[in-house]
Amino acid sequence: MRPRYRTGVSDARYRCSACGNLTRFEVTATRTTRSFHHYSLAGELEVEDQEVLAESIDEVQCRWCGHGRSIEEVRHSSPDEGDPALASTGAEGESTQT
Image (cartoon, rainbow, N blue to C red; front, side, top):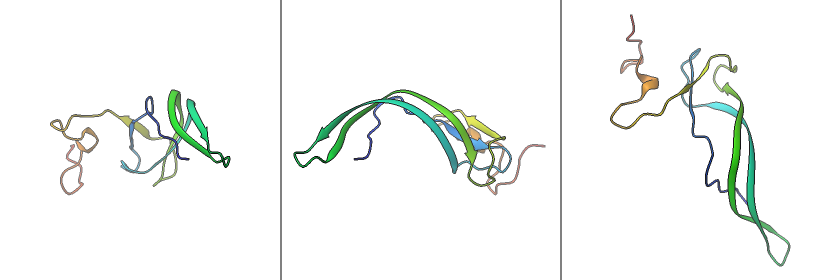
């Protein structure tokens, strides 16, 4: 009975500028969906198809430092461009900005 989102789900990537987190965020979202509910003869529900019609991101909080005041949305890059979220750090994680 798990939903299978087909279209419209946000794939935004976030970065916390306070602590540098790129991987762990609490995201609160509101979605409007249309789904096909299939009930077995025993009465058990299986959602076979679900389409996201609209989505809004209500809140994003950093899982590491616990607040949402410094969250930035990071633009997606192609594999050739590298990761823009990591552009200001060197291989050892030290800042390369002066």
